[in-house]
Image (cartoon, one colour):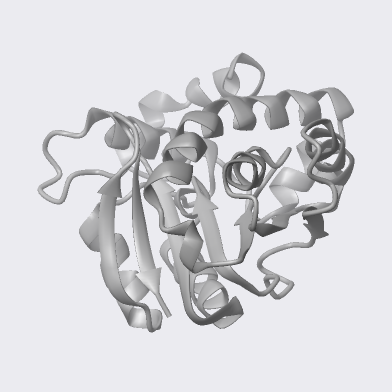
Length: 235
């Protein structure tokens, strides 16, 4: 956090005064730029695993994995989420999708957990490339990085990649629907204001409406941890 966020947060005053994004970064090129530094890449990937594991362990318990066979985690980094799910459910196969520089870290991490025969890395840019097909697609702390049109584009890509009867799982620090009480969600959204070129966090009602717009049905919200919840939509 110190390496990546201290500088942009120096723009907090301007962000509060204007409500305007403080980063000129656009698209996945921003990630590709700082992933070009191996030390930064490893630091970011480890941080993502640390933030993902509590959610992944809870998700392994509360989602009906017995009804599905394949899983793709979007923005997977080292692959913490598919590793935790596959470790808990021996029939699950699939893997993770992320930018090409993450491949080595993913394959090393998955290999350390003895899951190389069940989980593989899918390289790509999720705005430029189709998502890998699966029964379940997970987007954890992905949508909040992007503006509204980009959010909907990603949801539509997930819908297209899912098998019939498949499920999209979105998890975030959701803002409460009345926009009054969820400090974690508001703080995360403020972080997007200073760190990205248009990202923002959102309420469960917001996300349900976007998912319905692209075709998802039977949309449900379930708490996962003290500050994060999942929204599940079915195709």
